[in-house]
Image (cartoon, rainbow, N blue to C red; front, side, top):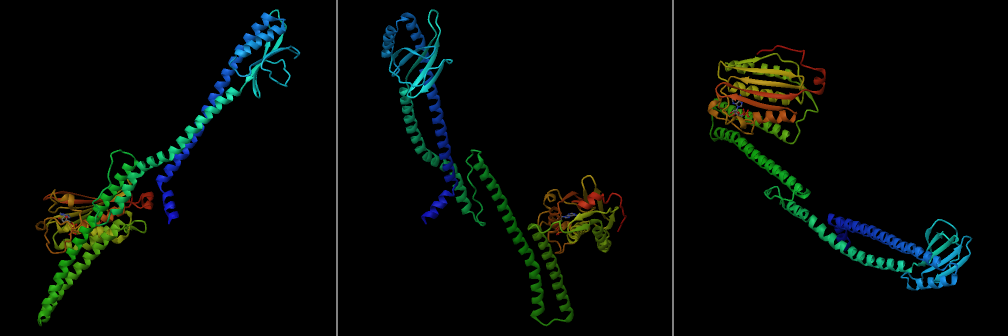
Length: 482
Ligand code: ADP
């Protein structure tokens, strides 16, 4: 239990942030302390060495005064040592060969023989020593060894070490607390996001994450999640609306079937009456099956099952086949069906979907065109864009401007009085199916219309890779007219 809580705690961003903060502070404190110590030490040594250098001048003057009375010289050097601030200050004077001539101050027992070398400072523990060469007019060449106890340096460094250590300890103790507070502040909005996300239900998607207005990454995350929630909510709303519409559409033919059956059953009927009633039932069943098929296509589109990767279709063949199929209907309604040259155009997607697409457009065009009018079908390959454009233009009643933006919405039906056939065959799904198919296959569909003059629907689809590569459609032209 405890170990699990510990594991949960150590898995949090807050804990990682805190840990990182401690590590960074630790490294910074260590590097800074070492740096400060080094600079301080160098400065102390420089000061010490400068003092020794100044002493060389002083000793040289004393030698000039007292030479060759070494005893008097040693006395005055002892006087200098007595008043000198450096602990255990001493001076030793040698001739060129290294034989000691005089000494003053502290009795520094340095075993190393003096050598004639350029002036240098070095440590001869526990002393810091300066060796100089003295060449003054009227004096023989002399070697000087000057120095003092470096303990004062070590003491000052020890004091610094102590101060640095105490301060570092305080900083290191405060680091986890500071780290915890900072990490808590930084991760608090995440906790809010988690809490709000946990409260969200598909039935209650109205809640949104708070935006603090800081514009930081967490604000951006909240904004992204909020806009995702907006999209999910609108998707769910549309789906609910769709299901309600679908149920409503299914209810009417079912009610009609039920009433026909009830009429048939409530008393004995003649064979003709039964035939009429069964005919009505059959018609409603036909409509129901058609409606269910349309709903299925839309559902397939919604779940991404319509895709162009599995098969390809020759769109020109489908157009030709549909023209043949609608020829009789158009004739019956006194509508002329025309088509320009149909170039070969291979497009991605199952041919059933393309059949549905062309037929829905043709069906509408014929339905809304009065006798004597014409419906024109065109197919044009655009090699530069690697697309093919299918146009279905009619000379029908047209679509009012206020309806035009809605014609691709599911279950949208315009003013029925403009329709010549006001039967139940209209479900308001035809164009939304066309749009679902075209978009799933990577294309687009657009409608243009002038009231009283006619409408034009334009479908743009990408050509298959092979067709585009082979330039299909550029040379093959066929003429078909219905
Ligand atoms: P349905 O499947 O019932 O035909 P659609 O989705 O195909 O429904 O069409 C929706 C509405 O768009 C129709 O009710 C009609 O008002 C309008 N519409 C579609 N095509 C045409 C057209 N060619 N001319 C005029 N109006 C049209």
